Image (cartoon, rainbow, N blue to C red; front, side):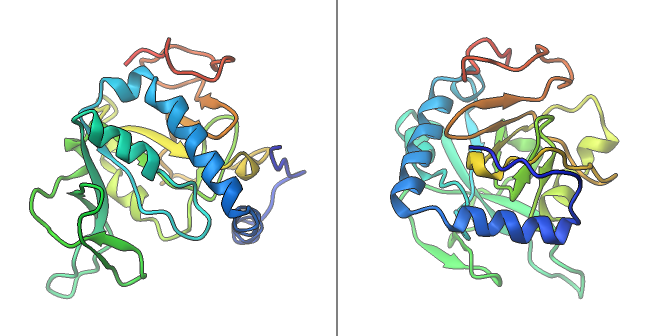
Length: 226
């Protein structure tokens, strides 16, 4: 059941509450949710047509995308994981690159302890991807995303605000249903998602540009134009 919160919460408090909710899920629930999300997306047109798909390595109770990554690999698609851009000449590494990843390939932890592909060969920028699966802390019915607060994805995808005609990659959030809230007030720097997929439903942003309007009631993106 979705965690619908009355009124507006300060973002920090909301993050703390939603992170606790997803961490409270049992391992069995986590696995069941991951399998359900993979099954839903594996037959969606947006996934079937994509060739270069970025995933993420789950942490802190995030929805595990690895079953879907394995399906992508079996279908001949190229999977990627985010890597922190290194600090150069004193500048912060505050954006993400995307490194090819094959299930079972060596990983190494970044400065936050999150595994990244050890190899840096074949790095891609976000606009070279077809589809980007994004982690999140919370979301609402309009697919506004509440992240961890570091801003890495927002800065990486900032070009989408400056160039409205660009539509790559397509942005899909992955979450547990318990991470849905009544309303997330978008900030000027936030990049809205095109859809959010949970174990219960695929929630499509009703005002997604150049896309079919309305939310899919049958929990599938089969009619959602790519």
